[in-house]
Image 1: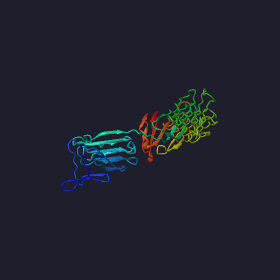
Image 2: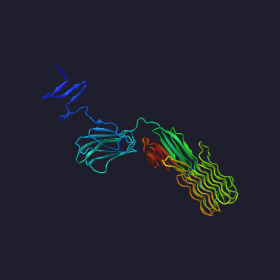
Image 3: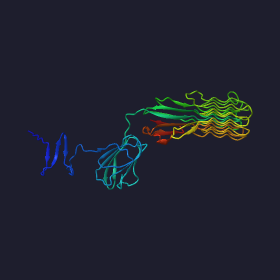
Image 4: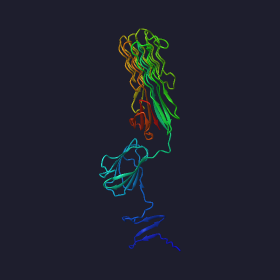
Length: 433
């Protein structure tokens, strides 16, 4: 037969409460007491005491505590205790999944960390948690768990994209300026986990000497696509018109594209059409026709303006491109190439990477790489300007950037203080949301 003794209070010989129950709250000992567990015994239920969310840039940790650390506004450096006992534990966890953007640095405070005093460990993985235990003076603090937890409740979010195609090259043998690559922007919904495929178009290759056909080459399309995404394709810029006898149409006609190439040839010839195929809003503009006076050729169209009209003594300027602040700073893309002139002055390249045309028998200037600018036109002994390669830029909120890319894009966090992570693709690649 067993007995059960029920008490609310246990006292020591001095009458002090050792165990006291009051309203279902059990107190063991009193302030200043040391509670000791016998060797070999287990204290069930003891553990880490979790703290309120930490948003400060610096703080000092206390052993036996867990700290959810929110770095969505700033990076954080935590200083460990100046003294530690064997078995002391501390946990740090990425509360807002922002450590990739603003990392956590641990200052060991003169004690060793994994057996070393420098450098200070830095944790920069989204969703990471670090559980450290003090072992001894030789190794100091050692992480017993260090890893990221996948976000199992993914949320869709808005992402901004800029897609610029490769520009067309300038025409040869009295050539017009190349048209800029198509310029398109869009705000899309990204739904994790999805792989988005980025294709960056090349600029049109140059024309040299009096080769036939002498019209400039179109660039290549750029695009972004993925499941659930409205595919955005920008059309390649049209090559500038030339004077060869095998132009696939009217001699001297500029080619159609995102923006049209300028007219070439010995007399007034038509330019290529921009915004082909048509998009909403328009992805580019027409080039300009060549002048009826020989050797003054039309400017290629740009994203923001039609190609400039040549005069009786000058080539047409390339049409201006369009500015975007998706990177956190205003940058102009997709300027048209300038037309050739054998008289006073060649056409200048349009703002946004357009290359200038040549004068006399010189060569046209290349469109600027990764702007989609059109190349400048040339006459008959030089080389026309190549079209500038395109670019695709993707902007997502800092805290939602996954860090998973291929194709080595340039990645900038908090770009221009916007709280956005910007990926600039200058070649083909992918981003996994």
